[in-house]
Amino acid sequence: MRNDKKEKIIEIATKIFSRFGMKKSTMDEIAQHIRMGKSTLYHYFKSKEDIFLEVVKKEADTFKTYLRDELKQAHTPDEKFRVYAKGRMKYLQELVNYYTTLTDAYLDMYSFAEEVRKDFSNFELNTIKQIFNEGIDKGVFAIDNVELTARMVTLAFKGFEYMLITKEWDLDTEQEHDFEEHLDTLIDTFFKGIKK
Picture 1 (cartoon, rainbow, N blue to C red):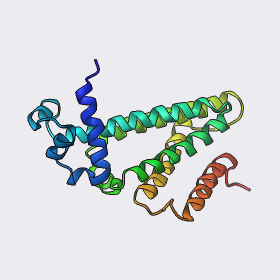
Picture 2: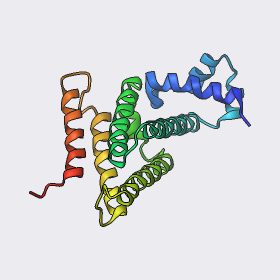
Picture 3: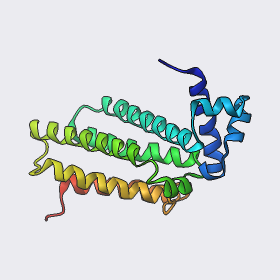
Picture 4: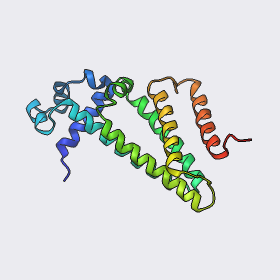
């Protein structure tokens, strides 16, 4: 059953966290922006960390839905892999732009939201394995160990994710082209291999 008040708290908290980060945001601020008494806020959530976790869960669910929708537009296994890889990074880029304080939250809250990250990692691993297995069935891919290959690809994606979030790649500059080129190189290397 949907709880409108709870949804409103999460919606407002998302905006506050995106501007100030989780550390600097307070339950008072959230209650004030919602025009709700702090005691009512505590009725729904025990702490701002609980609210933040709900925000992260909602964002992860939205991310998964976005990726599933992207995959529906691709028809072949290699198209699906490209669409997934590029869609994943495009969505994260938008997230980084929206959450100006994401770097701090990401680094400080990494272990806090570990369960949500594990859930997303399982989703990603299973999605990539499905793409690979479809490619094998259709004679497009030749992969000896689907599980291991999918794990290596997810590790590579996480490396790109880290670079985006910690702003080692600033996608508002000319580095955006470099980032896309690096991602294309990763995908092409996967498809072509490095053996002469």
